[in-house]
Amino acid sequence: MTDHPWLQTRSTSENRTGSYLSVQSVRKIYQTRNGDVHAVEHADFDIDEGDFVTLVGPSGCGKSTLMSMIGGLDTPSTGNILLNGKVIEAPHRDFGYVFQDATLLPWKTVMENVLFPIHTQKRDVKQYLPEAERLLKLTGLYDFRDKRPAELSGGMRQRVAICRGLINDPQLLMMDEPFSALDAITRDDMNLALARLWDEVRKTAIFITHSIREAVFLSDRVLVMTARPSQIICDIRVPYPRPRHAGIQEEPLFNEICAFIREKIHASHATHTPAA
Image 1: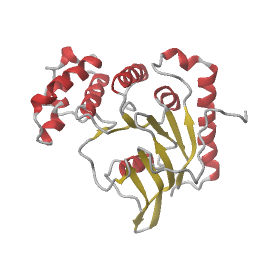
Image 2: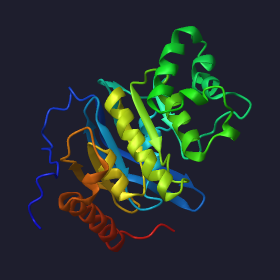
Image 3: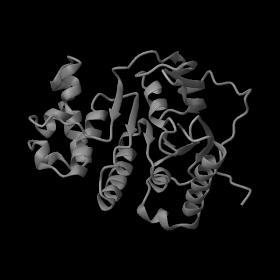
Image 4: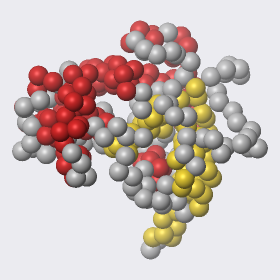
């Protein structure tokens, strides 16, 4: 296989001033007592508004570090990250975050957990109540709005976390392995639930996963990172329209893309020095 029409290419001379999110020659180096650690060696890509983009790569390759820099939680050693042409220098109140652990407050109800960011930002909770109800209905949680986290399954708690990440109508939603702690069946259900939700909200998203099939099923684009010191070696435009249905995972093209990504990740282990 040499011709892959779903591989993205971009000329280095292309004008990038109009990009929604632009990651420009970003590196991240941590200084330690044992020497410098190159967490991200080179990241350079653009994201269009409304795209669902997933980062995949081996453990420890810098996916979470790169997401933290995009979210303003960390700063690049070199390079810039721009949102609508402005450099991201700090956490943004209009960004949404979803992590591996749902981190719900156990003493609060589902509705209170969803609205918690509005409380912390001292916004008018009443104005956001209709949106909270809409999100809970979209995720099948409305009938559980008065329940507490201990009364929910793991998948339901993660759906609450996603609703919480979306409640403030974020410019950018970042999800760092939100389904990795779930069992396989629940994880499949969550993939379908997130795909359906995305058809409704259409927010720009950056997603991290170790599951190649999950990445291809959910994403508009998949960025493949090498082992550390990492760089992005492939940018794949997933050629499936939305809405997505589970059956595409059985199609030859879907499996061809998954096999291509898997091959690239495995090859990066052979060509990069393992982290100390």
